Image 1 (cartoon, rainbow, N blue to C red):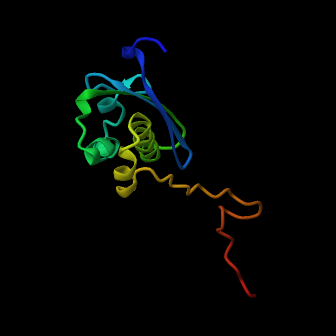
Image 2: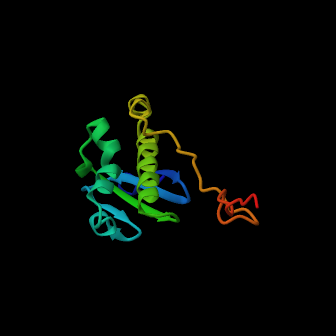
Amino acid sequence: MADKASHYYYALGRRKSATARVRLMKGKGNVVINNKPVAEYFAESKLLLGEIQKPFAVLELPLKDYDVTVVVSGGGHAGQADAIRLGIARALVEKNEDYKATLRRAELLGRDSRERERKKFGLKGARKQRQFTKR
């Protein structure tokens, strides 16, 4: 292993069709998503910013002690935020196994497996059909 400065903890988070690859390392509080600062990436929603910081808040860890680098693809902003949150939580567990119980109690380690159902042939959507007429 190289010097400690370059050491990071890696985790994968998924939600709906979004996938987030998260790297967590000691640093100065920089959160970068797809080479953009987090405030710029989630500019339209402060709620999603809070969602991403939830694992740190639950563990009462200062975000300013860590740098988080994320590569996220697929899905919309809400799904991406949830995928990033799961990735950060898993990376924190990778760093310290003692965090696992606290994060599990806060329901931050569970993968929400709900996916979009595919459209079926002959229907308007996944389940929507044409209106039935008896006569």
